Image 1 (spheres, rainbow, N blue to C red):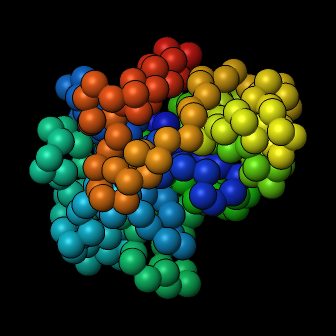
Image 2: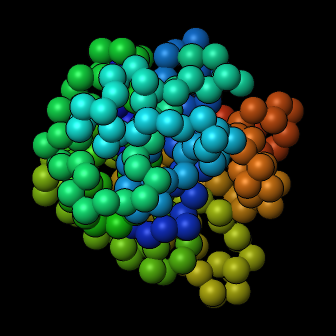
Length: 241
């Protein structure tokens, strides 16, 4: 039975997909069978982050509508042993997948993997609330941007009212100089305002963006500062589950 982890954020652009993909690659490297369920029905991105966009033939909507079998929509990542992805439709169609259908699908695939990492859509919406309820643990991603912090706090409060799922906080793309100059809150104040266990603070690193945009998970770049930072953050989160 898979451990389900949802990666959420209050605002787009916080690095949520980046973290979800790197966490999955890390776990697959520990010989765990891992599925990344891309929950971004507005704009999927996991396939692009892993350089697999041309390999997606069937998607979640095809499964729930009976157009294919589940195994046909679960795509193995050839470069990473034990890593698989499952994508939403490329073009969103109103009513293509209901919340009930998605919930049932998660239950049906749960016994096929050791971990299911859900890349949830950003913000407060019915999908993020569903994924939060279905999860064993949640990793909340925020940056120092005031709007991202505020919307993230609102999402955390909404999830608390719905369930008591263990939730950790990652402060991503941190630029200490901007906080020192008063442009952003410092990380201590952000952490305190969320009231969550802080799993880590990830500094801004342009090399991570370059790798991500080229379909290369940074955690796979051995002996680099980016990979070391990511590994420590993910390990700490998994240990607090």
